[in-house]
Image (cartoon, rainbow, N blue to C red):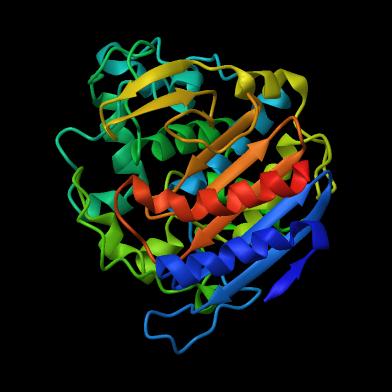
Length: 359
């Protein structure tokens, strides 16, 4: 279902292939190109038992694709002069200076170089939902790896680091800031902390194939609970669909589809810069990392030029922005697959969009 310009019909075909070849359950794909939503398609089921169809307004837990929106928020605040990504985190959150972290910057958090890729000792399950306690634990914790020198994917902790900085400089949680500044004024269906009135539209996530989380509480097991959905985890529980994420990330292009100024060169130059190119001991892959976004590479071939940035979510969702072509491609789904093979469904859609632009 949905609409696509004739030129971008191959994206719809790629989505169909995911259902035919990869046992997709429910999914959506969207493409923004040069200021227009040129593809917005979806299909399948929003429930594991197949009883509820995926609709235009279905939303889903996006896992770490949420990180692209969290990065966008910090870059917007940087662009507006509210903070600088080169500020020490402790300049806004003084308690964070403890245990030798006075030199850890916002940029380090955005690039997974902050040295705090996990809570030590691991969080108790109940503690995960206590924002203030989680932030207190991170503020007191000593770096695990040398800040600024060693990459390690901050899968869950990045959200607390960035979210607390946003709260300190704006007086709002990141979810409230997104709602007030971006989603409500521009009618975008993305939520960090889902209101009860919206919860019936959330697709049920099929996580049967996924192993338990190995760095603390089993977040995957919580994904379909009201407690998870209504909480704010800026690393991992944004709820939206391909269309809403593409609308937001169009702010990285020269022609956003929403009535806001695009990110300025001051912020975009940060996105373009590669701060790390090397191994990640957490995922076991090589990563080319800019400020807030990964860069296309041999291990993650999502671009056709050096101006393509991305991030992906556990189980298969992905957002890709080609800064050169003013192109945004987003894929989201509700059946999670383990291992790096999970991104092949997203990459199929991304490659179809790139091919359409070049045609």
